[in-house]
Image (cartoon, rainbow, N blue to C red; front, top):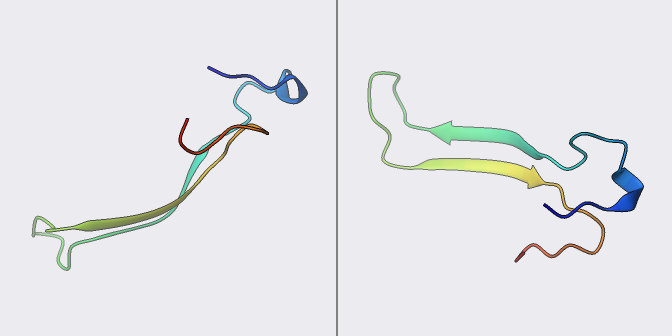
Length: 50
């Protein structure tokens, strides 16, 4: 795991924060699709493709 020295004292400085999650129309049905919107934290200089 890549660590940036500016965040050395933080146990988990970058996170996955789930903002919204939508799936299905009724509680008793299995949804066909789901949509999740989130924010993924990265260290300075880190690329999304990494």
